[in-house]
Amino acid sequence: MGRLKLTPELAFSDEERHFLAALIQVYPCIWNECDPNYRDYQSRVQAWNVIIDEFAKTFGREVTQQQMHKQYKNLRDVYMKKSRELKALINAGEDLNGATATKIFSWPFYHELEYLSSSSGQGGAPMAVTRLRPRTERGATAPLTLESSSQWLI
Figure 1 (cartoon, one colour):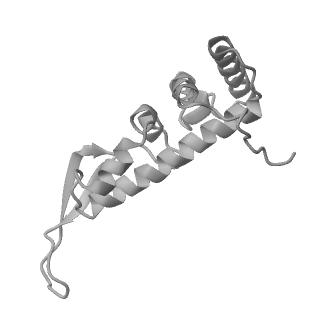
Figure 2: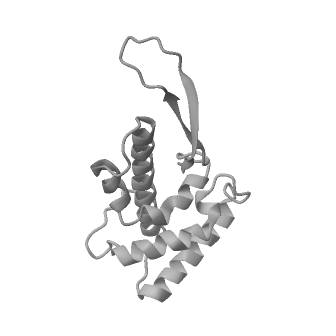
């Protein structure tokens, strides 16, 4: 099977992708490695079939499981990349009101896909971000202490 290229007639609108993100959240067997049905092929196929049917009813167009999965994978991959960028900002002690954080949060699907952080997949389970304190000049030998901030779940 060759790689599926999304031509303009196969591309999903933002509205369709928002719908897909919300609908997939209802089926943790697709995205959550901790779900008992995650490794059950039949459960996953059934979930995808329901999602495809709901999509067809809502938007009046038929899509294949391969097309649907490609859209989901793209959304998931971009979300995970932005989550890693955010985690790096936090660990570096950067201002979360800065331009980079604003760019991350302004992606239209970021908040809608936050449920992906609760799976133990690429993003790992939610955890408190730990930073080393105090920051010192290079070469300084101040003792390092761990400071945990549970307000940042990534």
